[in-house]
Length: 313
Image 1 (cartoon, rainbow, N blue to C red):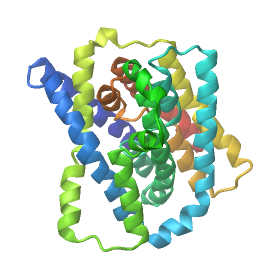
Image 2: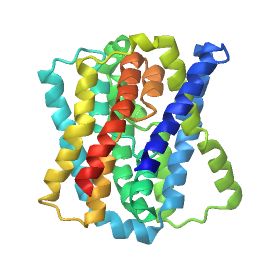
Image 3: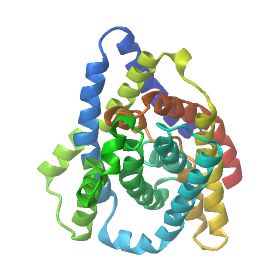
Image 4: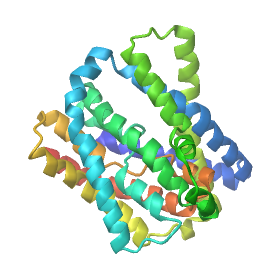
């Protein structure tokens, strides 16, 4: 449990560095835009590529494929619950897409993977990545489209979209990196050292730059302006109550090994994706809402993890 807490505190620490450097005038909105573009178009796609090519072999992936039904189905069900919740809670326009995305998708790699390793050891990695595949596929396809739909200035354009428009929006750089890595792994193409090292150097920028941008956004927004409103509370309910409950309920009908189930439970109840504020900023959505939801989800996780570990053990 101590290692899990330390991983969370590291996330806070890097965000605070970004906040302080913005206060000291080292960072500004222009720097945030540059960092966002670097993450979304270079670092994150290479991170996705490496996660698939380095952490899986073809045999391991095909052996685990039968366990993909539980996380895949749980994410679909959680999404439809988010749609119903958004209607009942009357989530306003400009937030609906982000609300559904944050309600459904969790931070499975930057926080989920190290926390699962801290709790269960290296034997949890294949199961954590299995959930990651489902989560990432949802987040960087339909989730990206939902986030873009919150840009009210593009309403007229969206109403006239065709198949090419939809494909352009869904095939984000991150998802392309993920699919290239998946095909690379399945085709068992050797990953030559220069390509691996090049990808690794740039992919390592993903987490620190994402957290720096969050620190910049928090400073620009103002800590006092981080709002725990009904939409943010709804996101927390989705992340920490609905999502793990769906996994537990489905496990009564879809039998999986105990360790796999416990890893899925932890992965389903992770904070909001680190990249949400960056995506909101990049696509013209409500970055204040995304930032508030992310920060409060990380704070809440300090207490949620205690309950989760008690439940699992």
